[in-house]
Structure formats: structure tokens, C-alpha cells
Image (cartoon, rainbow, N blue to C red; front, side, top):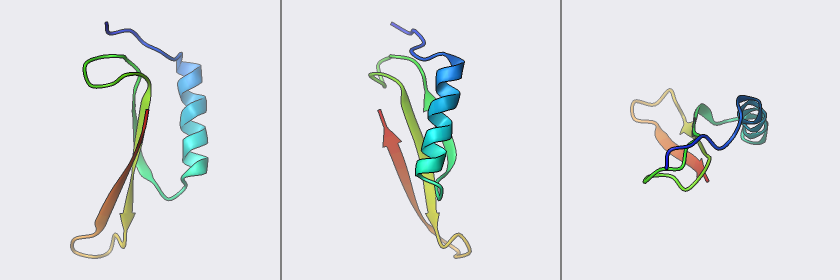
Length: 64
């Protein structure tokens, strides 16, 4: 089972909303297929704290 779940228009709306809701996260990606790794549409982004540091702390936001 490897089918697309959302239309391109739906994906764009979702991505706009998560970027507004989480403005400090970057590098947004998504998965739009049910498969062995994902149960449905998933989106994730990265938060980097103190990016100027040699080894900045990084956090991922992942939602299914």
C-alpha cells in the first residue's frame, strides 16, 4: 500500500499552517504515503538553538 493521501493543494495548506504555528522551525519535510514507516501524512521540521555555537542543540518536531 503506497498511495498518496493528500492533494498538492492540501499539502501546501498544511505546510503554510505549520510554518506559521512553529515559526522558529526550519527544514520542513513531509511524507504523503502510507507505508511500512508511516501510518499517514507526516510532517517534520528542525529547531536549532544557538546556531552560532560550534555544536548547536537541534530538536525535531514530528507529527503524524
